[in-house]
Every structure is written in structure tokens, then in C-alpha cells.
Length: 179
Image (cartoon, rainbow, N blue to C red; front, side):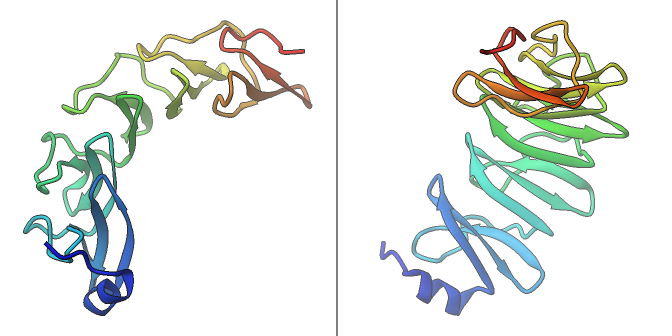
């Protein structure tokens, strides 16, 4: 099977993104789908939007809502959401109604709690907020520590930048201030 160059693929499609997990997302007209390295479509479905593959699934959107698809283009589950994120560390953030939470690859919620916002997982923790403020949660939706902050970012290298009362500083996974 011959691999096409990016220039060759751009003659076939209106937009071509980099390959991820062996497939590239492309746009032809107003529809998106994934292609194989030789330029042929990986599946027959066309969507209003698709994302790159991450952990075996890609984001997709059509008139029914947002969901994840497998490499063959089939939906990974029946549920539809307002917004969805990539699968990272086994879970994806989703927005349904006015709340955020995380799902497993089968579309089932990873926990019962719902948040005003929930971010993607990094180093086993995800940003979240509710009416008490910003904090990080574990895979089970339980806060990793008791403190609440005015803002938090994702963990990188064992630390997360947070702000409280106009001061910014780094915290460790357990919420303690890093020196």
C-alpha cells in the first residue's frame, strides 16, 4: 500500500491534519472523516467534525451531538453530549446540560459527581470547579485535597500552578504548597 505525501493528499482533500494512531483527519467540502496513509477513507461515514485519535477513539459531531468514534468510524457508544474532550489517561471530559464530568470509553460516567467545569486528566488528576472554587479531582471524581483556589492549571512535572487571593504558587498532587 503506497503512502501518499502531504502534497498529494492536499490535492485530494480540502484540509489534511497529521496522522494520529495511523489515521489522519481530513475535510472534503463541509464533511470530516479519517483517511489511511494511502489517502483512502478509513470508513464510509462523514461527520460535521472529527478530531484526531487518542487512546483508540476520536471525537465526532453530527446533528445528533458529540460522541467518540472507533477507527472504523462507528460510534463507541449511543449517548450524545454537548461537548467532549480527547481520551487522556483512560477518561474523556464531557459536557451535558450545564455540567461537566468524565466518561469511560464505553460512554458510561466514571463517577456520579457533576461539576461546573472539569478538565482533562494529567498525572492522574483533572482540574474541576464548583460553587466552592477550583481544585483537582481523581479518576473517581473525588477531590485530591480539601483546599479551594481562585484558579488552577493542569499538573505538569508533579506541580500545578494555582492562584488564591491574588497570589500564585505551585502545589503538589496532595494540595500542599511547593517551596
